Figure 1 (cartoon, rainbow, N blue to C red):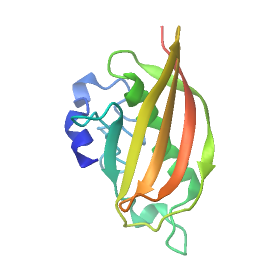
Figure 2: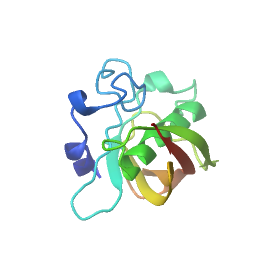
Figure 3: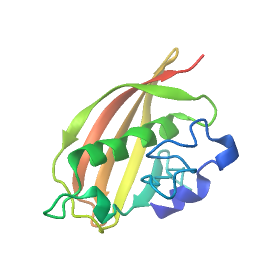
Figure 4: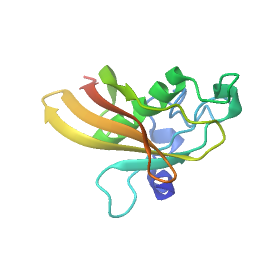
Length: 143
């Protein structure tokens, strides 16, 4: 999963470099989820280790941070680098909130194209493969 990061677009090619989730110009205060296509996989992946700043008093990552982590990878699975887009709808579920500090696998894959509308799915797994959260997304390509 970590090999996906090797294929993330450079800062100069990123449409939203200050995005909280995937912005390469937000390495000091963003989530730094840089999904790219690893060799031999049709989707995009990255390994993300949530910082304690994103956890509650019990040490578990806030649910809204998990939703954020599942957002941008869908766009990169569709081909965000070639055609910038914005999220139109996201639906899914968080099955379990992980503890901060544990490495997690973020994965996303392309589902369909319908004109300027594009579908994707994303998921968050533990390093052992336990599904923690999943989404389906509708992305709208910018004109």
